[in-house]
Length: 325
Ligand code: ATP
Image (tube, rainbow, N blue to C red; front, top):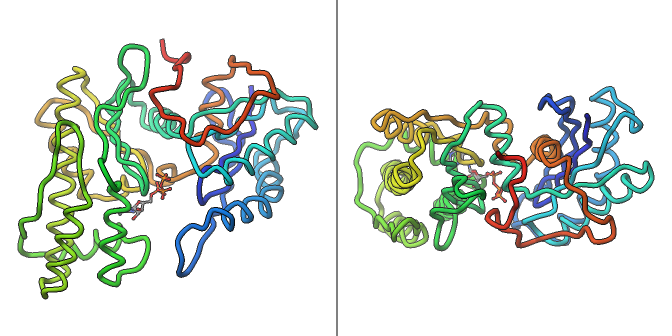
């Protein structure tokens, strides 16, 4: 069984061919980039529209497969930017129709979780999903992926990016903050806001920006920001582990590249006799390989072609996890 998969939820348009054993035969991506402004949805969709054919063609070529060998088409149905999702679905529907292949729409967040499991061999972890736009603590309980905690305002990645922008580090800010933090010497107390199982990052960033404007050192602030925000995340992860009685933690999303966050989660896991995993950096960001693997897991799903549509606000707890026994 082989699937050709398409990803287009946000800035990245990707195509990939994946087989039923989880082997990634090709993985082509192109990210919309801008020097100054943020993501303008119309421009992102235009990028996907212009690049789509080329990316799909290259993914097929790299996999050394032909369309006739493809069993079905998978695509990212949501959540995401509506205009970008529409472009991905348009390519997926055109291919499915032209080559008479079934079409399977999958949840993008679920795909992040499942590629993490595939690549790390974690079995039933508590997921710490932390990217630009998402911070969620997720675990599979009672037949569904459930969100045990999340950010109340901005996500961790966006919070780091915002602070970095304000102090002139550019985008993406996370990696630059990580480097500067290594030279930080003094821990500066910042607001530590955990409410139940949720975390709140926006007040911390505002506080840190104000301290920077008063002359506090960049390095000390980067160090303190990381220590404070990561400790909040580790605290709720530890509680989710205890509550769900699980013994694995899997870190996914772009912020998984941060070595200090990995180290802090690892220490907590060791103390609880749990195992810590982080998704390989190559697959931490948006990609179509994870959409392909999710399609393979859901290959038995059939929906009427005309009824398949984008789902921009599709939450993970609304997904029926038919592939998990
Ligand atoms: P989403 O997938 O939620 O729509 P996104 O696609 O922007 O958001 P990713 O590509 O998964 O998110 O991750 C990008 C984020 O990861 C950025 O906020 C970036 O600053 C952050 N990031 C990348 N590397 C590091 C690092 N070493 N330390 C901290 N943050 C990092």
